[in-house]
Amino acid sequence: MLYALIAGVLFGLYYALIGLGLNLTFGVLRMVNLAHGDFVMIGGFAAVTAFSAWHLHPLWSLVLVAVLIFAVGIALYYVLVPRIAATKDPEMISLVLFFGLSQVIEALAVMRFGNNAQSIYEPVFGKAPVSILGQPFPAVWVVSGLVSLLALLLVYLYLYRTRIGYSTRAVMASREEAEVSGISVHKVSAIAFAIGLGLAAAAGALAPFMLGGITPDLGVGLTVTAFAVIVLGSLGNPIGTVAGGLIYGIALMLMQTYLPSWSALLPYLLLLLVLLVKPSGLFGRQVRSA
Amino acid sequence: MEPFFAARGIEAAYGRLQVLWGVDLELQQGEVAVLLGSNGAGKTTLLKALMGLRPLLQGEILLGGQHVERLRPDLRVQRGIHYMTELGVFPNLSIDENLQVGGFGLPRHELRRRIDELYETFPDLAKLHSASAASLSGGQRKMLGVAKAVVVPPRLLLMDEPSAGLSPRFVGEVVAVLRNLRENGPTMLIAEQNVKFLEIADRAYVLDGGRISFRGTVQELEADDAVRQAYFGVGGH
Ligand SMILES: Nc1ncnc2c1ncn2[C@@H]1O[C@H](COP(=O)(O)OP(=O)(O)OP(=O)(O)O)[C@@H](O)[C@H]1O
Ligand SMILES: [Mg+2]
Image (cartoon, rainbow over all chains, first blue to last red; front, side):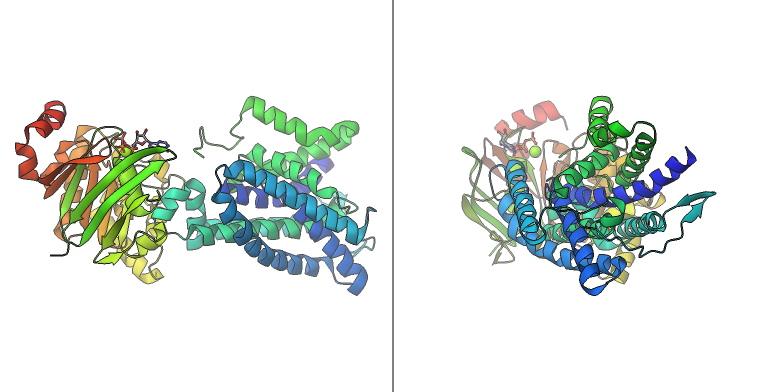
């Protein structure tokens, strides 16, 4: 039980990292990036490839791929979002476009990497387990948990301690109010969107250890998981995502311990539960105006 | 004389529903105008059009002789046109954060100085500076809205129903705050249904079904029978 709880927290931090980027994007754009999971997958393949080709340590890959995908995110934002926003039905169009993007990324990944699972099998974080409260855990889980925590902290500092972070939260509250307050809404949103993708890719670099093998079709499932995590913690609320991730991680570990055959259903079950019991999410305000 | 602010022939629509028809407005520098109009008359739409939040079908907007009708809203803010919306604040940010966002373009030290000045003007806000704006009362929220709109001193301040949702006592307070604000002068255009705001105005416009049905000084307005019936009959003096 204690073991499952601690493992749940470690994985929970990791799932929070996966969810956070999606929630940032949703927060500023009111669009669900259906290709979010595919950027995790890209990060995963990048880490695996960099390791097999140059023996690059996955933590270096993590930093590099996060920065690279951040840059891609900025470009992608300016290519896609202003066009989507100019259409009659931006929400619908965004779903279609991001779904298409997801399909394209997946197809390209199949062409490049094939359908077989790839991973990093060497114990790059050491063989010795790390003991927490007397329980032994694989070092890589602990590292991933800590790295995720660090990333979450950095995002927190960005949003709550910098002026551009305040502006980002202002855009989350109301794009219109933000615009007439003189905020360059596109600039702020592009950065948030790119951070979101960067976080996904960073999480991806840890995926070979946390999720097992990387396959091109990993994206769709991860998007659903990320969605479950952020709905749990309430859409548009970055802090709630951390709580959502922790609940998800702990629930997952408990299920894998006690009801292993059901654990694949977890994201769907949690989504249903939240939507039935408290649609605004566990940390949502009563009504959020879109 | 070329007016400080002029909007000419403004037309705007929601889809096929046109709601503004050839609206003309002019303001001299430092003047305060109240834009009266009943619900649905088009006041909010007009302010949004002036701000660039609604596209124009027709018309031009000049500030200090320069065209601004093609600029994005945030660039109009840079030109000195500020807009206090009905919401007016970011409910998810603290008071201090709201003011910092209001001063988006200012250098850090200058921003701090300005905010401290505003805290002297609005001691209530100073006390609550780290409270979230959502926790404020309606009146306090309007005060914050006004403060946020003037962190960077505007050249033209547009306001959408500053009295909305306020009890008469708070309306009085908002009017008092705006009277003070007048002293060192941004030009103001206040969309309102509450005639109390005429106390601080030089000039009035009445918007009716998307058209200007009256324009003139406040004295002329008060002498106009049709307007008196429509606004002073119900609203009270
Ligand atoms: N988003 C919208 N979509 C379609 N029609 C709208 C929209 N907003 C306003 N309208 C219509 O435009 C007209 C003018 O509305 P507007 O909000 O500008 O009036 P107002 O004078 O500000 O009213 P109020 O005093 O109630 O705030 C109304 O007929 C309204 O129904
Ligand atoms: Mg209105």
